[in-house]
Image 1 (cartoon, rainbow, N blue to C red):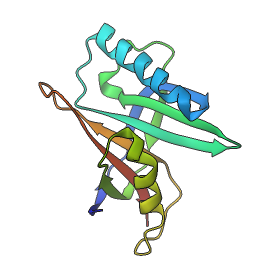
Image 2: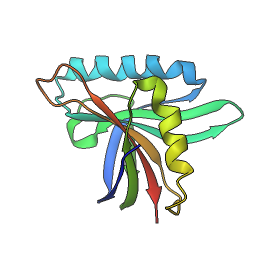
Image 3: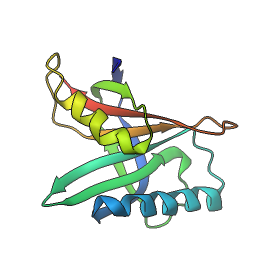
Length: 139
C-alpha cells in the first residue's frame, strides 16, 4: 500500500453522528447525502470521522466542510486539529476501509498521535464516482 504524509491546518466538519453498530453507518451517509441535496451544497469531499469505539459500538460522524453546510439542522460540528497524518488510498471499495486503517495503525515507521482518524471521500463536481482515503494522525 502506498502512503504519503500530509500536514493539515485545522478544519471543521459539520454533519451527523451515530453511536451504534457499524451496520448503521450507511444509513447515516444516506441521511447526510439527502440533506446535502436538499440544501444544494456542492462539496468536493466528505469525511467519515471515527470519534470512538467501545464494546462493539462505533461512534462516528459523517460530514462535509462546515463552510458548505449552512442550513444543516441538528448537525454537529467537529474540528480536526492541525497536524501530520499518514494517508493511504483505499483499494477495493468501502469494504476495504478497515484493512487500510489497520495497515496504517500497524506501520512501524510512524509514531501515532492522539487525534481523530478519518476517511476522506473525494468526489469532484461533475465526476461519476469517488476515491476513498484513510487518514491516521501521526507525530
